[in-house]
Amino acid sequence: MRVGFVGLGRMGAGMARHLASSDHDLAVYDARPEAIEPLASQGARAGTSAADAAEGADLVSVVVLDDAQVLDVVSGPNGVLGAMRAGSVLAIHSTVTLACIRAVADAAADVGVHVLDAGISGGVPGADAGTLMVIVGGDTDTVDAARPGLEPWSSEIVHVGPLGAGMVAKIARNYVQYGAFALIHQAQALASARDVDLAQLAHVIRSTKALDLTSIVLDRADATLRTPDELGDAGAAIIGMIELGFKDLDVAEAIAAELDVDLPGLASARSGFGPSIGVDLQR
Figure 1 (spheres, rainbow, N blue to C red):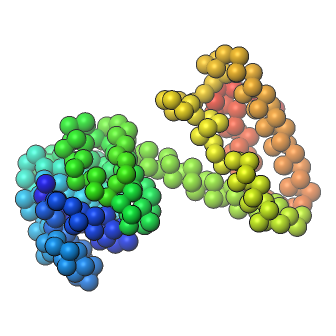
Figure 2 (tube, helix red, strand yellow):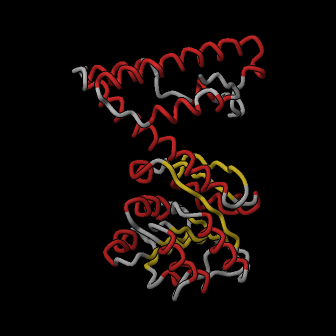
């Protein structure tokens, strides 16, 4: 497969290195010449522009920062669509808006190029190790066509739905992560207000799997939200958990008030905890 790769930053460089070590015919481009040289030394062709790297490619991967950069390297002057042939695949790995994905898809349709939104998860360590998860939106035939060019730098390719679905799934996943960051910081503030040893708190949270929400809320087989009705007798256990949860949130609110600690996550937890899995026990 002939692969064009645009964007050799912290993520893209690692991904491209794995492609350079594979059997694919690789061409690369980055706005910084110094980013291209290590890949050229591995045998990749050094593109003089995004369009040049995309010339004759079966798959073009784009790993740049944001909407503006994606639109520039895709359809701007010397953009990849000016060089891609009809029937080839353009994979957008950048985390961008749905409006950006639609704009790329519309421009690509004019020249017969197929588009995937193919978000990546695993960070720089995953890119360096070739173990990124690819979270893909697009039609099945296009995903299958692109798969050989995605596999060298990934450990799993997850096709989550039509075009745009990959980006939504990536953002939903990140929303959980960043929300957890905020809640952990709030928990630390609460614990610190009564001189709790934070290393010991971390041990308690890890050991009791407080952050392992997938095993509690999501069904392991098909990842649907569990509800008491669907679980039959086990539903009583969920209701009991939620009742205790609201009680614990009341206690958290009382302790936070006594210690004069702001816990903005409480309101969100209280409004969504029960209803999110089909039970409304709010008081």
